[in-house]
Length: 141
Image 1 (cartoon, helix red, strand yellow):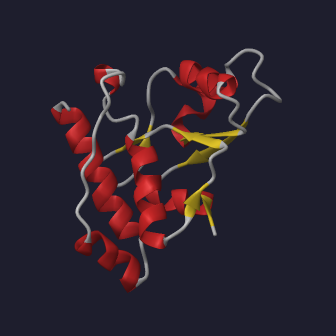
Image 2 (spheres, rainbow, N blue to C red):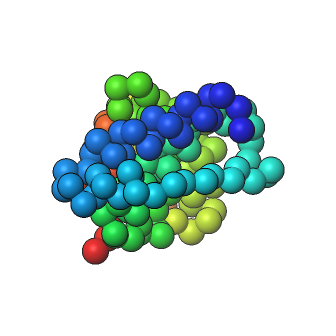
């Protein structure tokens, strides 16, 4: 894993912990050790566009909730906990449609890019997020 991916994952972890309001949720991060394995098929140049998805996963674990498996998530968590624009939104959304996903969660800053994707209307719902805290609304009970 390159430094960009490590840094992105670290930010995802830190801001997911900060987004947890209950003491037992925050304690979860202190009591558990995480090991991440990046499979060889992952594009090594992808950088941090997976960090929003990682944040959603961390939140689900801490809050003991499930992630809706009909969604795809992309976005980079920056140093302030904001989810910022990523490259190749069209390719990512198209892949989500091909995979049969119902919703895609993208950074708010990529909304204009999403709206430019040809023939996407009606094929997938989009939701936008601005910060890690916004991801909690996508957790299921």
